[in-house]
Amino acid sequence: MVTFIKSPSIIEAAGNPSGPDLDGKPKVIEEFIGRVNSKTEVVSIAKMKSPAGWIEPGQTPVFDEYTIVLKGTLRVESKGKTTDVKQGEAIIAHKGEWVRYSSPLPEGAEYIAVCLPAFSPEIVHRNKE
Image: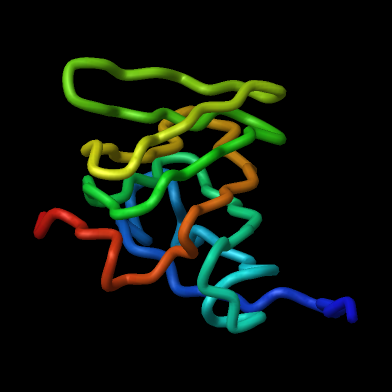
């Protein structure tokens, strides 16, 4: 039997919701499949809309995260390397690897994130910044 997902759940984002370029616009996380919206623990699939100037706390998650950028540029920092992932490009952040996401450029970023196992605040292990 198939499971139909009519709409996503909106998840509150960690990070800076009121930087100088944000005008109060928060990052929007639309979880289609995952622990909240479909009660799925093995994988989460979410669409992210990150405004210009957004920066998240660094994290060392206990999941692999596969990201495809649909629009704009997503900056991904890891130990010793920073990568700007642009529209049509993808990146994999491996579990146990420190990573930080941001969208510093004027166009912000829109992207799909797939986490295996599914994202949860308990297993993301965010830095206390």
